[in-house]
Image: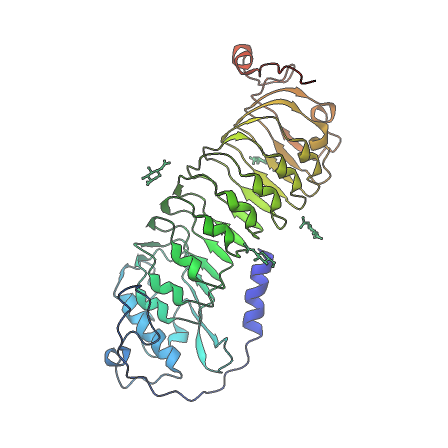
Length: 384
Ligand SMILES: *[C@@H]1O[C@H](CO)[C@@H](O)[C@H](O)[C@H]1NC(C)=O
Ligand SMILES: *[C@@H]1O[C@H](CO)[C@@H](O)[C@H](O)[C@H]1NC(C)=O
Ligand SMILES: *[C@@H]1O[C@H](CO)[C@@H](O)[C@H](O)[C@H]1NC(C)=O
Ligand SMILES: *[C@@H]1O[C@H](CO)[C@@H](O)[C@H](O)[C@H]1NC(C)=O
């Protein structure tokens, strides 16, 4: 996350100062939106006709932006904080929430680099015309009331780096158009009503942060999750099914993964122990079972483990409770029946352990004996 903030900062700092660029003559082509794909070709809209001829724009790109914003306003149905009240006139760079920079292609013209209407409480739709903002690097729309489809013309946003439409009213299947944004690194779709499958392409795209939590995704986690270079993956609060893929162990850059509150089942893949740089692992509130894999003792960077509210059995081992960076280890509401010594009495006083509602003899607030007996794993016949 730090890296993302840093990128933006550098982007803004490194832009050369504005030179008044000559405005190219407007193109008169009138192609109309491409009917097959819905993708706007460069001048797919004949915006010249729509724009008051007396308005003067410092660049053709800003003229296009003006057209896109004016069209967008027609699809805004509520703006209780009056965020868009100054969205009039040719100076689009002074509009609330609109940020201009010199164009990233070095052509020395001003262009719209970012839109940030976070917490606007604005209701409406995203329209195809927004695909005219081809120099956008940031699209932040969190905590509004937008809904409807994400227009396929968003595939024209080839420099988009951060796409955040979290906490809105979007629904339907995963918006595949994000796969057409070649520079996207930060994808935040959380707190919407997207449903159905998490597409495997998601993990073949070079993203740094993936937030899909609090939607209605109900597939399994794609087997290729291990291909992802993401440092943060949050899939919590969906209806994900199936097992945690073994490939997860290949995610060398993974820092945080949160899969809490789904319907995951099966045992933990032993490959989780390969995540030597992971700091946060939250698998709570699923139907996971079996024992803690031995490899957990290798998680030398881990600070927080939550495997609470599952069906785990067996021993909580010292190898985990003595991990050097561990601060918070929650394994409440499982069926663990043995606590090794350093889990019982942690060496580090600042380590928080939550062992409630297990089957641990002598510990307070445990499950009752009959519940524990029912879950006791059958003795396996030793293989010789
Ligand atoms: C997932 O959700 C979709 C759409 O809501 C539904 O059609 C489908 O049957 C669900 N699939 C599973 C595996 O639950
Ligand atoms: C991950 O990063 C490597 C090295 O930068 C790159 O070659 C690879 O294509 C990336 N993979 C994905 C799925 O982004
Ligand atoms: C963990 O991080 C270190 C340095 O931060 C890096 O050298 C190492 O390659 C990382 N481990 C993996 C598995 O990527
Ligand atoms: C430890 O983690 C649990 C579960 O994620 C959380 O509820 C609790 O507040 C954390 N405790 C501390 C002291 O950080």
